[in-house]
Structure formats: C-alpha cells, structure tokens
Image (cartoon, rainbow, N blue to C red):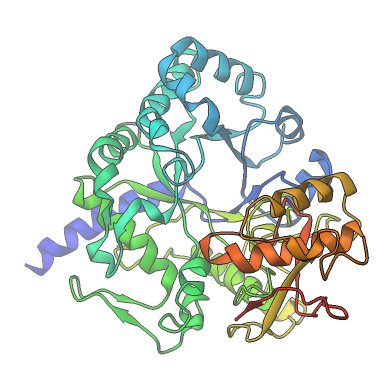
Length: 464
C-alpha cells in the first residue's frame, strides 16, 4: 500500500519539476496609470527592473508602455477593457482587429504572455456584460491563433466576491447566479486552453472588515501559533491568504475542474488611507508584501494546504501610489513607489535580499479603529471650477445639506469657496456615509481630525 502511494507522488514530482522550468515563482508588478504625476513609461520600466520584478501587468494595451518593454526580459500581461467586451464577444472581426492593433505590432519583441479579458467583470459591471465574458475570451483566443500567436494565455481576473461561501475553504463555492451560466463555461475554456484562473486576493479587505475576529498577524503571514483548522478536510491554515486561495480551488473542484492553476492577478496591502481606515500603514504594507514574496519564492515551492508544492505565479499591486484612483483613501496608496520614483519601503521582488539589509519601518499607528470625530474638507490647491461643481453636487442631494451656507445662514460667512465647499463636503459625508457616500469628490476633498468649525458655525462630523 505504501508503494502505491509513493508512485503517484513521484509522478506528481516529475510533472512539478517540468512546470517549474516554465513558470517562475518570482512576482511581477501591476503598473497602473491612474495618476497625473507618474513618470513616463521608459522611466517606469527602469523602476520595475530595479524592483527585480519578473513580469508586469498593465490595464490596457498602451503603445508607449509596450514599446518601452520591448527587448526586456519582463513577461507582460495586457488587458481588453471592460467597455468593449460586448463588441469582442459578438464580432469576430472586431476581436481580430483589436488583437491586430494591440498585440501584433509588439509581439514577440515585447514578451506578451497573458491577455486578460476585462478586469473583475463580475464585480464591476452589470450582469448584461457577464454573459459576454466567456464568448469574448473564446474570440480573443481564436484571433490570436488566426494571427499565428500561440503562446499567449487568455484569462480574466476575478475578485473573491465570485464566491458564495469561502469558510472553511473546503466549503468554497461559486455564487449560484454565476456558477452555471458563467463560471463553468469559463473553467471549461481555461482547462481546454491550459490557462490560469486569474484571482485578485486581498487579505487586507477581509481583515479590515472584521478585525476583531480575524487576527492581524494571521493576515500578514506573521502568525506564529494562530491556526485555522478546516474540519471538512483536516487541513491547517497559518495565514489568511492561503485560506482565501484554497476556497477558490475547492470552488473550482465543486464545478468539476480540480486541476486548473491559480495565477494571483493582484495582491497587496495599502501603505496609507483615510483616517477611518484601519491598518493601512507602511509597516503593514511592507510586512505583507515582503512575506508574500518570501512565501512564493521559497524553494522548493510551498503552495497552499490544498495544493502543496504548487507554484503561484503572481503580480503585486501596485507600482505607484496613484492619486487619481477613485474611492476610499486606500485605493490611492497601494504603491511600492511614490510617483517621484522613490520607494515607499524597501522590497526586493526576487526574494534574495535579506530583510536585515532593509531600512527600519515606521511603527504602525492605526492598527486599532480610530475613536473620535472626523470632518471632510476641501483639499487645498485644487481646481476652483471643479470644487464649485463638487459643492453644487453636495448641495443638490437634499436633506438640507447646505442650508447653513446659503445667504443669511449661520455658516455663510466667510463667503469663501473653500469654506463653503468644506462645510458642504462635511455635511454631505456625515449624512450619506452610511449609504455609501465618501469623502473623496474626485480627489477634491480630504479627511481631517482637526475641527474646522469657527465661531458659531459648527461643521457636521462623523463620529467613530
């Protein structure tokens, strides 16, 4: 009986050795461009090399970036934008033209290896687009083949919310509304073309949503004696990342595709955020990303409890802090670099630099929830026309948001665009935060713990 067990293990080891020669465990970097202060592509490519990244992912097919990547050893992932998925899926000629215009001029001198159709389509588009996702993937693959390009893998990145259940990992299952009509055909396509299930995995968001029940050290790969046992399989988990990834493995297995490989399309931890966002700091970001690099570059590969020994190719998000990303403050603070090219913290994506050689990290100061009042005020130095438009929007939402800054109101004076906008932003945020309102206003607003009230004018605040 022991010999019977050894034979399959030897076969698996041989297959693993073959695949190890093809897929490097060294992480790549996501090169986003949502900033008005970012270096040009050639400078950015030099910075990517300096981080010792193995590959780079861009969120479109920008010619200047693909030219800058020409004749480098960086493997490249490009993306079909969400807004053209319908056209790609329904019109093979359109698909052919897109590939002809965005891949052929650069391939093979630019090492395009992955072509991702859309970005988190299930999470970020309406369900009218969902049905076109897999047909678009099929058309793109046909277009590549018809143009003689056979070494580019086609996939699509998914967020963790494609799962209906994820705990324990062995209960991992795709949502009922997408499991049959979308995920099963997608998995069939990935299996047939020997591609990857591209997955965005962010332990930060899972932990931040429940910091009481999820241990921070467990989320940062730092837990020494904290484990989670999966009663369904007996598998033992020592970090949240493995737990999340394995839930997807079990979800694929449940649909009949237990062997598809996972490619980590995005992972990372924010180095800053809004006042009310817990745990977003340089210390945690450096700790998570350094430990992630250590995990995936360990030799021999460790994989996950459900897939021990498997290589996890990956991209870390992101290259820069991008100041034009919408949403909460963390969205603009995932970078390994500041826009001027300097490092937010030391990191080596090859995993070869000893941690003792890195500069000391600043102590974290927001690992527990903020307690107190927060106001939302207009950011200094922003475009006055844009601020006036945002002020008008905040005041148009009803609920007497701006009554005190109207002529004769208690906060009308000083009659200043900055002060009126600050009052309107604070009032809007205080009233609509619980229903999804943010203190952002397209980058025109910022949070502050300093009370902007003056005289008898009291600014509304959010109390945490």
